[in-house]
Image 1 (cartoon, rainbow, N blue to C red):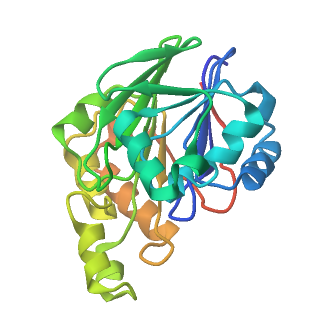
Image 2 (cartoon, helix red, strand yellow):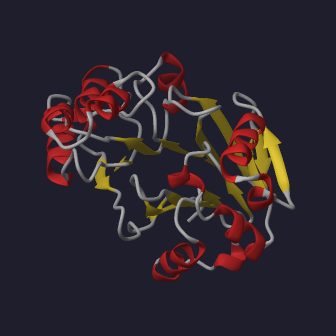
Length: 264
């Protein structure tokens, strides 16, 4: 085993995943409480003391709510963009969000943490400076791409040739239209800086997806406006006409429990 991804949680109530090599372990986002993060890690047989760093994709609370306590408890560096850090600080209060070991990065500029090459890239979302990530470990490429409104050329370019692709499949359009959200929230979710629908992801799978991933993880499913079987069925139907893509193992990330670790 040279690369591992463990999704601890994915959804509007908190997002958190681990990307690991034999020597380096990265926590990607910290949207669960510290206690719940440690609980999920224990259930997934992951040692918190083995974590090397925390990466933050953007400042929204479902990606940062557990960050201050986790960073203090684990005493490991936190990586985010300058704009994300500034906005997070203004929203939550500078005292609450002070990080003793803060490392700033810029979208589009790769950097190493241990033996993992991290590449952050810009995604279309209504945050200060939102990014997604790809990770390279000994020739294996993993991508975590959630919280974006449409699949831009930049997103397509960066996720090409991924061996593991964790990608948003947030909502079913009809469920969203007739669901309980206020119209203003529905407009935000459906916008080009909102969240990716099942249909939009299916269109990508049908036309632009290169089929390189051995594992595809559908992520950030809405509890109100989606259902796991609808998301799975929509993705499978999009992949079915292209027999060369049927080797992809399709998995669904959960809000409530850790996903089985993916190992390559």
